Image (cartoon, rainbow, N blue to C red):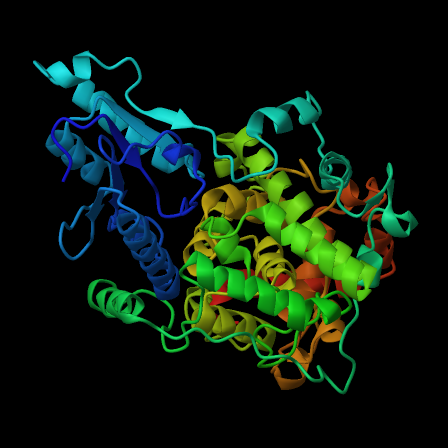
Length: 527
């Protein structure tokens, strides 16, 4: 243990497991201390999936072990040894014990966390007779998170004062800046975006020759964390029997190589498709490693580009994958820091319905929801279309409170950190911010799910049916949603065709749809 007082107390949060972190710049093992805190609140402020908590704690403990092996003094406050209720409790205790000349951290990706930590340090500073606090110029020296490829300041400059932001134009600027998939100043293949080529269903035969993702054995640290989570959070949602997420940088690099070698060649065409018991398909499964900072986004992007150049892979698929990281991921973070705190409370449609209980259990008669939620509970994972066009789309047309659904997404997915979860959910899936960066709500009838999956084949409801006992809730609520917002959507070129289809419906049928929708909305738990 370093002498007291120490020079720098360097706070590393659970999603900041970056060996090149700006918090560690200038670190002197002879004078400085790393602080890492496991806090109960980080698993309870939303009802966190057991796999999410396990991933964060196991990755944190492995990271701390690696730092200690390199000679760092690590003050690690574990749940089962220190029992800190909040991150602020752990920070206050460490400050009292270590009496640092300065506290250093990387800008958190959750404004709730930053606010709580700043408040804790302000309360220390306000303490009577606290000589340490009185001498501080900045209570916490927050450094820029250099993991990302676009800083909040750069994004703010790009966005300017525009009321409407579009990821596509941001993505093109990032391609130019990092010279990714470029030939001079032009995109390879003659176009920037091949999304239209990446929306195929599987057809009746279903997915063929699906590669199995790499399997990671559980060492004593992960096994210990699993036991801890089952002990302290026994009633939390989710299952740990098939936990298989990378918890170290070494494992994350193995997962990256496995994706590039085995699944990237066939990633693109069917990336939107869904199928019963197809938990992962050809998806990358790298988002949790990226969001914990075990992988750097540029190394992932360049690995995909190199594979395309060396192996002549399908360009639409590679471009689509790169767009998710270089474009969408960086764009989401920019939007988060630009639009908070109003994004947190946004509710464009004024939706107030409670989240149905079956979002936590998967026990619903809608097979598409049962499949997607069941997969989520098993793995803490669902791919983007399952999140956007099944659980998210239902949330919009069922008029569920955006805040309730955003909390659910933050709780149940292993890759969820607020900077990426909130804008994706509130802005993209739920249109809660009124189309700040999307041109229309992402809504469709059950016919979309039938086209992109086999879910409808095992369902009580019929996707083509709008009224009656067999009416698909996705279909009924979709038409009801259009009916409620007919005038607004008729003026939007992206939704005008939907409204024209609505207007072809006989008045009596529209009335029946409204009635059936009211019945559904009055008892969402029974669907």
